[in-house]
Length: 423
Ligand SMILES: [Zn+2]
Ligand SMILES: [Zn+2]
Image 1 (cartoon, rainbow, N blue to C red):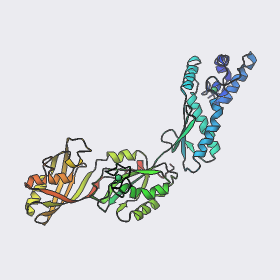
Image 2: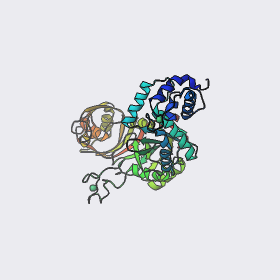
Image 3: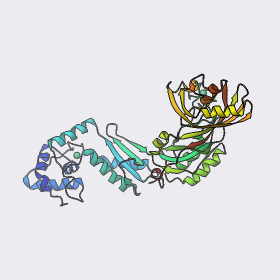
Image 4: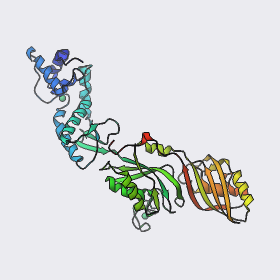
């Protein structure tokens, strides 16, 4: 690439200078892609110098294109540095929201003085802000255009700087060894979360949740503002989650610290959870792992304690359970109809077996598709699930205890794992 020759844009530069007062940055932007090692302001100065002998002089005054926007970069950057004093991060990005007037002036500038070598105003402002930010910060950080750990937007309409901190995502699998714990916070039914006497002004229907139990230590370790658990499906509140556990991604919002030691975190979570919940070793993962967990269509193994209305024998139980293997039509169960669309879903039972405990009780194990409602597979839900164990036996049957024995899925693969929170 050849070095910058201001004569290449001399003609255009002259026209621009005649149009009104313009800053060196905006003048130099028309030649931004020419040459190397110069700032736009330096290019602007050279264009001006090259024209000085021709009698064309720039008019003094506020830049008619940007309103001297570049003079205020230091101010924005000082504010940005103030915001990140206690923040650990390695990547950042600056953005700007122009006023409608500035948008118009920039569009007019581009249309009236077209140049193939120009850098747009926004781009230039963001880049220059980044350079100034890195210099003032005095720590090694790099600009990143997708999913930066910290991003700023200078809003010229309100003169306010906003900052967004990328969440930190932690992957693991949890087991729930105690019944009656919801997966996520459940707002109080009486007050819908506002706080009332029924919930002792906690706003919650249940004192805690798997989410809160896992999150408390991690929020602490990362200095996060809050957390959100994204589970690969969820079990009923009264069902235990056993085996190797259910995959989840815990999102830690606004983390002050990203270099969280996940080995320590793992131990602390299990200590705090005191055997009610346990988690597998944890890893830091990419944001896209949330979508992966949400879309995971794992089959599941359940164990159900079943009570029958009349005595049955072991052969009957075995035969009718085996007859359930195959496709099941399930209309949305009564108990969830208030929150799910009423329609018929097809689910597969892959395996079903059981053992009689006495002549009216059995221990039943079912391996089925994700989304198969086990309680209804047993009870029939007044004919809404077909076939069902109750339907086959011609008597009432109901689940009195339910456990998820296994969520049959792989863990996240290497491409989703971060070597540390700062990468
Ligand atoms: Zn300007
Ligand atoms: Zn309440």
